[in-house]
Length: 427
Image (tube, rainbow, N blue to C red):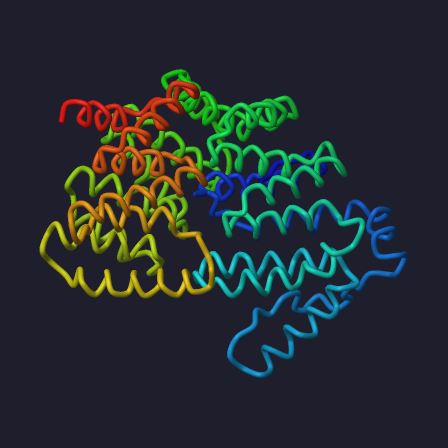
């Protein structure tokens, strides 16, 4: 979700986005950087802004101490301040971008899903207009990504690109969503565009993910190794952490767990606030049976659904710590999410069913149903592995055939998936 060449400083800000955009289930994107870019782009485009607002003069604070966004808290003063800012943002797209992005960043940090709704309320008056500034379309698409409404997110990115064909942020977002959903060939042109636009680092990491998922895993690994070796100064810490996490994912699929652990340890040191990177590191530690270390890594993260699940897994295998407490908290959160009609935790529900089955036959079929739904929605490394585990466990010929057909068509490589399928054939 980020890159562009409007101004050198804007490009630097855009790079911060790349980390969040690709770490998605990724799609756990950092909207704060996105919005900083959005605000800058809007400031550059005064003509388009005036047309969008019907010629009304946008609000511009003259006091350097003016608070752009005071996030809503428990006090009436905070709520009143938010209401004032919300009202002002309806006539000022730059303020709307800043306020929505601050809310999105706070939602990411605090794991409070209601803040996504507040960010959407800031953007709603603008999204409803016939003409919407491209940066606001991208912020709205970011919210749709968080809800796993990937087709809708792509549609907004398409609109942003139609409005501004040189919007690198929209192209990276669109590529990211295509990668997450396993549509690698549609991601490839946007990755190539990014490289051709001058954003060599971001474009290289983008295309490496495509190569690594279409039969060229070792070429992708070599590309990123050369990229990191060839830059003396290197990018920002956040983008370097993103690059390391992508390298770790490729190493995992090649069976190089020690290398993946090293990459993720470095990434966590560079971006300690990234729960995505912590979860990935915890998964490697659990896979290597370094369970105490995994718990330590998880203890430093916010108690999200992903953290609670991995903590329960590690605790259950060591028989130390309150695994049942973690499971109870996890199930309560999943129940609340289901009551809201959300399906943003299919990955965690699938892994929960596979790791903590209650009865043999019923749970195998239930886990397969969850894994299939999740695989149809998103196809990152963990999603594909979970589907393979569920297929083998349920011994379902139709599901096995569907997975094999996709693997053959995409040329996707993963030693763990290969081992699972071989074990299923021999059992």
